Image (cartoon, rainbow, N blue to C red; front, top):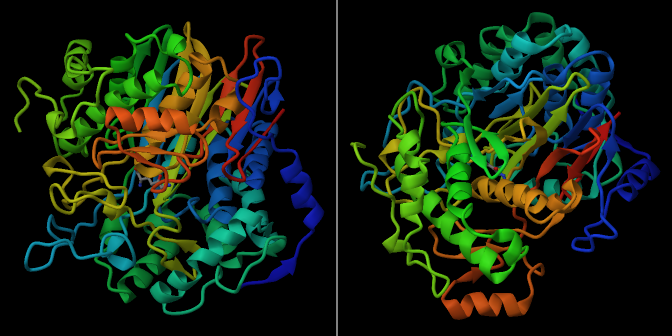
Length: 568
Ligand code: DON
């Protein structure tokens, strides 16, 4: 099943030395990412970006490359790339048509609202975050097949061929990967009750081969989507799940469908922004925040200055308060999208904003809507040579999801059930508070923050971007758009720039450590803000593609990871 071969260190060294260093501000020496003329893939791993590009070069389009890139990430970035998770796609076709696909995991048929509570009604620690009860019904294979069937050009065998080769021949462990795998070593053993492929003290520079996954992918290439949901792979998966005590059944798998959704679209100055709709909160929150900050002259205030941070943080607070109350799976609840994103409502939400002091969190809560009753993910962006653009964010939720690894099939399973609200008012792993709208029910999709986003300027494609980061996804996407648009950064500078985050509760501004000057932090504290530089030392890991004035593409591959842009 497993072979470790000492790999060629200079390949890794060569790859890392190509990466751009962070250097912001000096407009004379702009730090640009990779520039290409026609097409580009930016993802968390060089191998995945290369395979996506190879598919484009073979005549495939962005949707063919999506399938290849996503599966390549499942091979060489098992931290978040997956077959056992789910995700969201936002696209813009060459003719300007926009749309979205939801392949989010679902709660099993046997799930129930209080399944994570003990007899006293208290949340049972870790039940929704680690191990078998945290697993939702996976959507990834349904998602990539649905997108490819509708828009792709190539046959599945051609698309999956280089991915299967990658799993068979292996990929080189990077330094960051070595550190990550080592830090999960004991939890892998504890949860799986045995050693798995990723135990064994893997070192940077070694090559890791996953033959079980190669075989799974080969069966999927031969038999299509149904292999995963009703075929041999599905049966093996359910057998594994049930042997561990899961409530997921063959019926759960057989009933899973990816769903086309209308994306959220809105204007910010002359930008037209398209982002993910529920069951992700990403698009609505981004829309709310950007509409609330639009009247302020952020350009004049400057990047990451006191005034900019105040405006953005206060808008974020209000949007996240609404998120926690109103948002959930639109197939189960009514979401007052129009009201929540209306300019009148959002102007009113900001009417108690003041530069003099923070608005107290309990003075915010969720807004009143008339007539309303009631850490690890991965993102990739692709632009193809035909003019199609996609933004895709996919996840197992936590790093390596539930930590459960299906040996025979070669992949990890998600712990996405923790994105539901186990109990109203009780924070989940990301500290997000939920309510009835996001309570558990059979077949319901858990609320997400994933924010794959496409931006147009004057009607033309401008940017495709997104990020992992749990609750910080929305605010990281926001800051990256502002960095390019308001602060004139290159795509590479925009993704590298230091980030801050506020999510209403807990009442704090999270900031990346050693990134903001001490005087600024003291000014914020003097105003009454609580600054936390330890809770989320890395905020987001944004990958994006920007179209430049001459029609060429600039990749922004976040320096925080091994992320790499490849194209032609
Ligand atoms: O869907 C969501 O919002 C979360 N499951 C995303 C998790 C994530 O981004 C973890 N990455 N750091």
